[in-house]
Amino acid sequence: MTVIADDSNEACPAGLVSLAEKLADVGGEIALRYFRSPLDVDTKADESPVTRADREAEAAMRAILAEEVPDHGIVGEEHGVQGADSDYVWILDPIDGTKAFITGNPIFGTLVALTYRGRPLAGVISMPALNERWVGALGHPTRHRDPQGVTSTVQVRACDDLEQAILRCTSPQMFAASARDGAAFSRLASRARLALFGGDCFCYAQLASGWVDLVVEGDLQPYDFMALLPVVEGAGGVVCDWQGQPLTLKSDGRVVCAGNTRLRDAALACLQQVA
Image 1 (cartoon, one colour):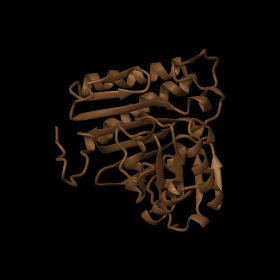
Image 2 (tube, rainbow, N blue to C red; image 1 turned 30 degrees about the vertical axis):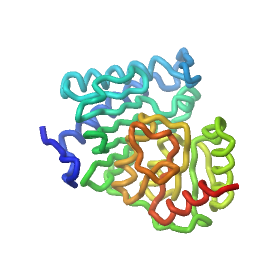
Image 3 (cartoon, rainbow, N blue to C red; image 1 turned 45 degrees about the vertical axis):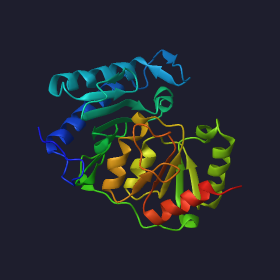
């Protein structure tokens, strides 16, 4: 298997991109099998919901990895960490947006990411109920497959003025644990032209396609954001934490995603402003 050097810009091997899409196919198919069907909903330790669909989908994805790349590590939302010190590590979120899923809302996704020694190589944002998919990979432009099956490359749109930006965030409750973060986000939202809530991973797909300009969130886990990085960056966007640092598996879960560096910097300045 091709190895990516840490300091190179070598493109992600096509076989690994295909494997990422295969995982998204399997996870999404299982999610759709249970979508809008009666399901018991359990509550995890972090008070987030989980269903049989989440667990079964991730188990199927992990089974494929065990068969095809048994030496690779896995970080999954539902079944934990395995081989996290491996060079290649897959990060899986079988149903991103479980709250949407259990309420019959089609805006949920299947996320697949691959890293090499911590560096993002590939990411898939798949929206099973919408029959849409975004695929990003190092050295490749981000691709979007629409509901009719037509694939095209996508690009962020040009907006570097915060006052003209459309801002997205899944929920203001993401900032409930920190009054300071909540105030910072409210300040940012008041300056944006439009601020919309809801969407989970779909927010980042919208940004990659040039439909929105800025996504700012908090309280995320690596399986929530690692797949988004190659998708957004391959479309010309930028992603960082609230201090402007690159996102890693050890990041604190606060994310800023923008169409360009000027808009990112404006958002960071607003978030970091002393009240």
